[in-house]
Image 1: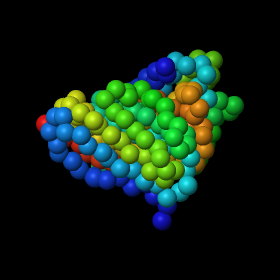
Image 2: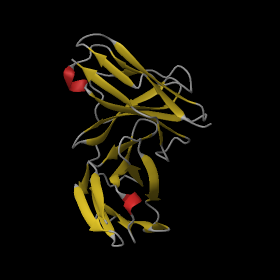
Image 3: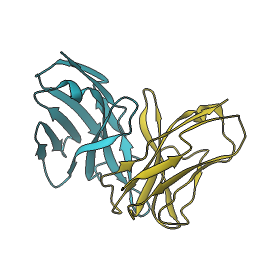
Image 4: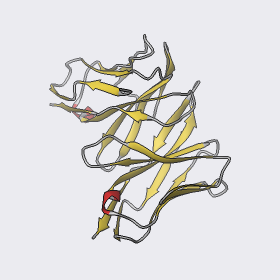
Amino acid sequence: EAQVTQNPRYLITVTGKKLTVTCSQNMNHEYMSWYRQDPGLGLRQIYYSMNVEVTDKGDVPEGYKVSRKEKRNFPLILESPSPNQTSLYFCASSLGLRADTQYFGPGTRLTVL
Amino acid sequence: GENVEQHPSTLSVQEGDSAVIKCTYSDSASNYFPWYKQELGKRPQLIIDIRSNVGEKKDQRIAVTLNKTAKHFSLHITETQPEDSAVYFCAASFKGGGADGLTFGKGTHLIIQP
């Protein structure tokens, strides 16, 4: 089944404790992206990647890191999480290099205390 | 960067009536405009999109119109049904280093009244 998966789905952590949210797609998509969703603010793009080892900043990249060492995986790294990073995070992928139909993962609910 | 404004934030319509959601964007270089629907507790899903070389696109009860001169685009849903109740997001592309990014509007909560 073609899909985008994320892990964990729910995470509660404390300020400053490094964490990684994994994202994987099995559709051989070139483009992968991370978004955060906050009430009243909609979806905001954090980082995106057009290919292995190629990443670009989205609208809200501060406090986040990403890597794209393999085509199928695109982890989101929070080196020193803070409470303002409490949010719902979505990973997405699409086939082409242009912004195209994006397939979203199920979301990760992160709470930073 | 790109800035996308979406209105209204909440829209309540009677079942069977039409609903219109409007978005404006700032970057004249944007060339891709998708609309996503998000049901409660679910992930966003693409419902329709339009590229800058066309002015209108339809898919059954859903249509999108684009006015590049005015930099605005709209989602039209006709004969609304209870299952249309959801949050709808518009988005516009922007040019990154190699591929396009997407800037989303803040969303419209569409409520279909029985």
